[in-house]
Image 1 (tube, rainbow, N blue to C red):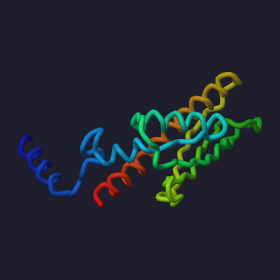
Image 2: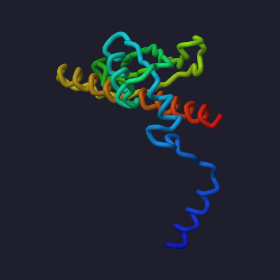
Image 3: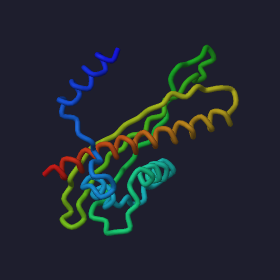
Length: 162
């Protein structure tokens, strides 16, 4: 078992993986992330995504050099029909088209999309269905924010590397 672990460590050492946040809070990756402003995103889904993004970005009291512009498309569609023609399941999708823009030049540094979806069982209680839809939106918002931050962190690392 120890030989397998040692072999695995040796193989991983040569794979080229590098930490995104090397240098800690003063490293170049964290510095770029700390310089990002996230403007208000409309609607409930926008509020949730923005809050999730702000939770993942380092606290910064300095100047903001970048803007993260996010446009969301939130949809719910029914599928799975019962014998009485009622819907038995819904699919909630949250799609984000986003850009990282440099404030000084207006240059678009990243233009990308993120997407996540969740299935919701339709039960006899309307309250339970609404609660499930809201819980799904919260999970999807967290997932979208994580995808965006991961992509921006990779960009920050590549910028730091030169």
